Image (tube, rainbow, N blue to C red; front, top):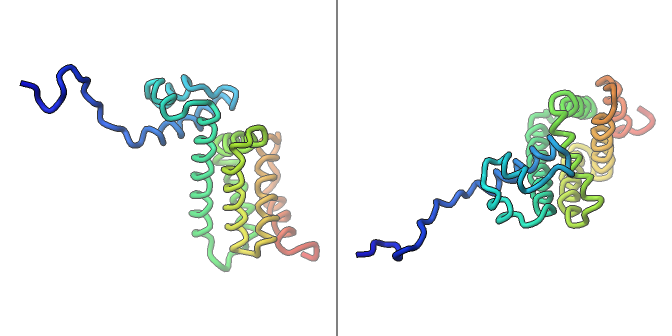
Length: 192
């Protein structure tokens, strides 16, 4: 007598609904460790602790892996920025708060910041990644503009990203007061 399965059929493994996210986070880790040129399905599978077939099943090409890594990094970054913004009191000195945020990204989250920008810059050469990068920029503009105005929000987002990229490759780190002076000028204009 045959039970609920057809005779000779293989038993189905339980579905792992978190596997796709696990692979995406592993792709970020691989880029952090090896750079974008080191991203392979095999490396991601090893980092995620999943069979190689899982990475190629969910993400056929390396561009698919890059896209999901960039999406996950952007989502994580925007979530952290929104949490940060909720913790900044409405009457806080926003230039000082932004300077502290930049310093935190450089000092405390340096490797994470580098991988996010590696992925972000990859969009310059891979047009299909550009919408994810643009969504990341839009979130920064909206977030910073909510504390100032839309035009200043765009200026602050550009300054924020530029500073993080410069500081990621710089040998020394400027003081918090130097960074604050830049944000203060961007918010208040040259008369500050």
